[in-house]
Amino acid sequence: MAVAAAQKNREMFAIKKSYSIENGYPSRRRSLVDDARFETLVVKQTKQSVLEEARARANDSGLDSDFIQDGIHIGNGDNSPTVEDGTQQDETKNGHLADADIGDDAGKTDDDYTLTEEEVILQNAASESPEAEQAIQQAALLLRMRDGMGSLARILKTIDNYKGCVQHLETRPSQLTGVQFDALVKVSMSRINLLQLIRSLRQSTSFAGVNLVSENNISSKTPWFPRHASDLDNCNHLMTKYEPELDMNHPGFADKDYRERRKQIAEIAFGYKYGDPIPSISYKESENATWQRVFNTVLDLMPKHACKEYKIAFGKLQAANIFVPQHIPQLEDVSNFLRKHTGFTLRPAAGLLTARDFLASLAFRVFQSTQYVRHANSPFHTPEPDCIHELLGHIPLLADPSFAQFSQEIGLASLGASDAEIEKLSTVYWFTVEFGLCKENQQLKAYGAALLSSIGELLHALSDKPELRPFEPASTSVQPYQDQEYQPIYYVAESFEDAKDKFRRWVSTMSRPFEVRFNPHTERVEVLDSVDKLETLIWQLNTEMLHLTNAVKKLKDSQFE
Ligand SMILES: C[C@H](O)[C@H](O)[C@H]1CNc2nc(N)[nH]c(=O)c2N1
Ligand SMILES: N[C@@H](Cc1ccc(O)cc1)C(=O)O
Ligand SMILES: [Fe+2]
Image 1 (cartoon, helix red, strand yellow):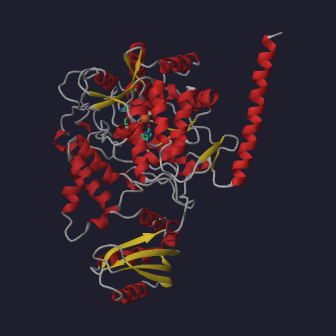
Image 2 (image 1 turned 180 degrees about the vertical axis):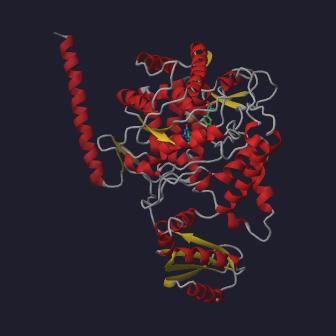
Image 3 (image 1 turned 120 degrees about the vertical axis):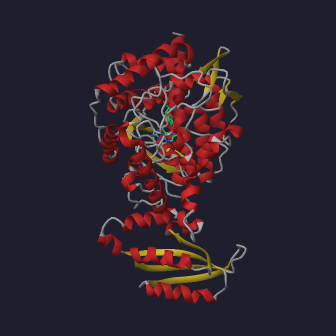
């Protein structure tokens, strides 16, 4: 049930592809309600009106009751970490918005709601300003003609009506059933008219499909992906489903001050550019208090339940005075700490990022970290990542050299991967990096970040409630999951090393037709697609080898002296 609802939620609000497809992609639009970038307009409007109503009902203060007594819920009978009062009746709304509200919109087909990524980009580009709206755009349209060539006349006429200029036209017999011909039409016209043209053609029953295709997609071998760490400025697309603005079950949904604070902090992430120091935040007393509650509980539970590598790195963070109970560490300090240990750095993120963008940054040894704090009412489990999750969950292991290396490999594997592969990669990521358990001297230990940052879930995972399965990437990668409640299934690796090894081996079986490599000196990802590049690399490696061989020789010699 929960998995189905989460799936639905994801289909509705997530974008499958992400990071900037083209370099000219307009970045840094925010997703907080007002101008969510990737939600189609229709979905967004529907969603907003439902939310407005719900918020009016919730009455902005009635919901602030303590719903977690003393934080930890154990033994309340089910998996659900949230036990609200007034919002309960709305619980399934998220999952069913699509059916209920959109289905009612008579006369529209599904296609109306699924703008292609190219169309969303076009729409955004057009909405920047009145001039942008009138700017002339080159575009290619792919039309599926049900009734044969006769429809061409209609296409040309409609383009003419919208003052467009046809630059190229070609047709082919279609392979789709029920479609006679496909037509590829390249046009040049104002953006606003182009959007209307698409809408108008879609209303005609003569076409089984009308799609805007970007020039790049027609014949590109290697898809766009970030090549340099600075390209990550474009890889910050958010999934908005669990923001307090948008999710009725979010503990901050009915808390105006909290939502305001979230917007403030989000501004930092939206304004951040590669190379900037991460601005510090002066956290409020209540925010530091939330940190302290979680921090102290982690301190209590860690010795018994966390894996060895986590504990060692945690100790180093304490020794460096970064992990202290009194206040939330600043991301800039954490970033500098990580840089010294593993070369990882942080950049601020405004919320839950799409899997594609999130994974891409790992390729550059960059971890995109949120900076806001969970709602004070739910210290021990929250539905979205917050800085307590990033700091207590992810940071310690990112300071571990072998884990850092492994994280980067996942990132590199994600670059230019297909949607299906990203889905699998993020599923394995989910069950390992986020929720992984492993054995250590026959005992069950947690290494997953979302377990180590959520005491509620950690205790649930180690109780007899969930199902534990042996970690096997091939099967784990296709296991559906939900991200609203505690997990019903966890995967257990034979050891922490074993989890990394298996994941690594599985990643190397992925089908991407090219290999990439990260050059740490330039912070650039190179596609290994020419003999020249490979020769340069081989030469570099030979030099490395020479040094290593010399080192061995010197050590051996000195032993005999
Ligand atoms: C890759 C996988 O989907 C994973 O759960 C990601 C998604 N987006 C994220 N976004 C942020 N800000 N922090 C995270 O820890 C994650 N985790
Ligand atoms: N549940 C985690 C936070 C989290 C939420 C969603 C995620 O995808 C990851 C982590 C916690 O309470 O600490
Ligand atoms: Fe996470």
